Length: 533
Image (cartoon, rainbow, N blue to C red; front, side, top):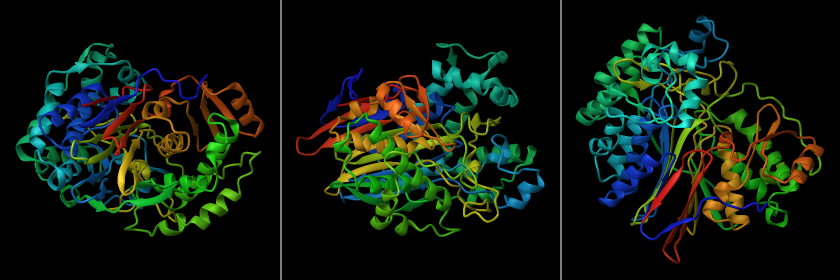
């Protein structure tokens, strides 16, 4: 099999391009661009639609990160809209509740949701349309419903017991106690009312108004830590991206508390090698990339946290000498054992990703999530708002940089990525997938840069994923010789089906500035689709 065989065609356009994790969201973003909105407007509109049609993955009660490039001043910024721990959420308070680690579900898995403030901040700084106008794109899908699809059914089935335990979630996603069937219309009237509240009052409806009041009442009833002061104090951060050079390109991403630095560390190590000298689907190349990932993740797990609370040695982690020393430690014939991190961040496969380029050359990468499927699996009854479980990004180990503390942002798997050439965006790429995000992104980058794949070929190429327990998942579209070569090298190989959903839902927009052409690729592993003009 050709490694770059595709089932979908490469999509090309000359004016604008948008690609998202759901066709209705892609359509919303395209609609905004058609009426003169810019890339930020389109990205927010698409994300708002996904809060309705991908309710298990993202929502008003989640966090987000964005990379925003503005062509008029050639500026690239990171918007970090991740929320903070409540002011009374101490390690000792969790210990008194009997927790040895942050729970997977329930109100104690919740930090302040940051997405609403993030959308507003992006629009105030770079948008041309208001949040009320863009919410109107999502409102009908909540009020009137949308057709349930197979993936949503699967996740409702997987989280059924958790959803049944929460009255509002049960009523919404398991009406009559039954799992909805594919094609059944899912209606979310209370979520629609929350959209109207935001359209009328803006983000104050959440941070200082009726939606926030409903959240605080719900939290207090469940013994949670959230207070009015926590919601009022929430702020977004505008940051400079962290970067590294790779074969004439500049890879950019969000700084810690995001895990994006692990992508740059993997690129730095591979820059000392020549992937193109190896077969693209060979055991030799997969082994090299997996071993580089292990070394990058060891540092990620040791250091990445909220730098406002503990210094993260970003500059040292990205030094070329450090990459050279690490790549020299890789045995080309033997997989290294993984030293278990002191505390593993578990879960978090459930995220949405999208990217947009508009006719003026502005470019946006946005990634948003509830962390795990249906987040904390609790819904604020009066609002239809599911809450994320991002507090799972903390440890309760007292001596760890990422230990829970009041007002602290958790370690975040979310990381947007954009690759520049000559200072301008050349490749916009990303994927859901928690630990898999940087792994998917480095595979995309290598395919696109080193092997000359187009945007669709890179998205559909067979994929691997290395896990914290030392296992290596690999799709069965890799040659049997490759799988056997990895086993021989000592990898604990677990062969998955073709186009396995755990391998993410990647999307790419590649920009050919010389010809004025945009190319887009969208991952068939989930429901990603692109539209261009």
